[in-house]
Image 1 (cartoon, rainbow, N blue to C red):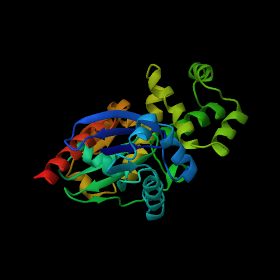
Image 2 (spheres, rainbow, N blue to C red):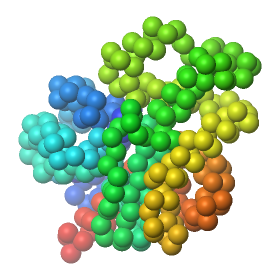
Image 3 (cartoon, rainbow, N blue to C red):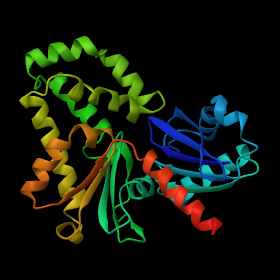
Length: 286
């Protein structure tokens, strides 16, 4: 059996294929970002999934594409955890940008992630080039879910958010200062906690205030994560992730102003990953 996973900070989607490429099951665990979880927490989140646990000894290959896997130290850590659980499997760990690339293109392009976190890379048709390593939700993650969550909370507390929208925000979320600080500074997954607030942008009627919040964040992402690539004038720019999917109109608007061609915009890369690995299986069997 082959396990393929696209793992973000909030959740990880898993697909199990047999040797012929047929889907055995599809499941989900909580996020497995090694930047914000310790080894015991990562292992516990895998173990508690009954479908994965029931077939762990039959798994021969694990391909995990994850947030927080951009450094050798964290990749090695996650690989050792997986190898201790999937005792008969060859384990391959790659950064989530690889999953995004494999899901949207086989040709040169810039591929961006806008989900709980954010990132971008250049794909030359063979190699993935992440030119600016991500430093995570505190220092980077422009236009991500956690970025917009922080913006909304700050606007609410500073009185910048329009009154009607602030009242609605207060009805939908617990905005007690002690609760927010506890979740950000003392609980696991503070980035995923912040990203939950970003849902407010898309679950309500899109007002001009919401559009301005989105424009500001996505403009920053374009300036720092797209336009710095000289190739952005000549290749399409693809987007993966829930923020990108729901803010596609703003992405197209800003891309048009910057003469950037937008390629695919998809919510989840897991389906594209399935096809990539099915093709890989076929080639290995030839």
